[in-house]
Amino acid sequence: MPMTDFTPHTPLEPGDREAQAAPRVSGPGRVLVVVYAILALSATARSLVQIATRFDRAPLAYSLSAVAAVVYIVATVALARHHRPGWHRVAVITIGFELAGVLIVGALTTWEPTLFLSNTGDGRVESTVWSGFGMGYGFVPLVLPVLGLWWLARHRPGRADAGASRGDTDAAGGRAAGTER
Image 1 (spheres, rainbow, N blue to C red):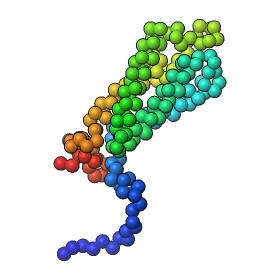
Image 2 (cartoon, rainbow, N blue to C red; image 1 turned 90 degrees about the horizontal axis):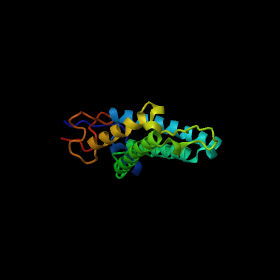
Image 3 (tube, rainbow, N blue to C red; image 1 turned 180 degrees about the vertical axis):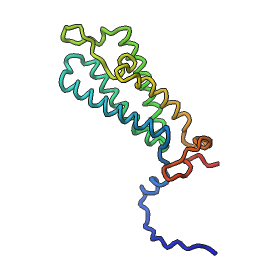
């Protein structure tokens, strides 16, 4: 005997269907999104203060901090939406750019620190978020893109086994999209 559902149903708006069908980031992916969001806030605050109060002192260093802030903001959004069309690619490109930035700026600040000298003539080297491979941030800027790219490689949209063997689920407890067996 079929059961009758007496729960009133309201029609879904077009955006509601997409929101219901889209899996939520869970587990390690959620941690990545949170860490990226923290770095986005930190780098944004740092660059805004540097640019607003002393940009003329070290325009290269402070501009690179602003670039890092934008990268972290875009990476946060892209990671949170990686399962939606186009966002996975945005996440890979952004985080790949971040890794290249950390390696290049880290190398330059380590082996050519004079590029980041303050214009005040005091011999002070001005740092960026990515200076010394992210030393000022506990090397998180160096490790995070490696973890982010690894996680994205394991959670490609449309990959038949993405997350299934690891038990990844969406916020409602169902299998993440593309993980059906």
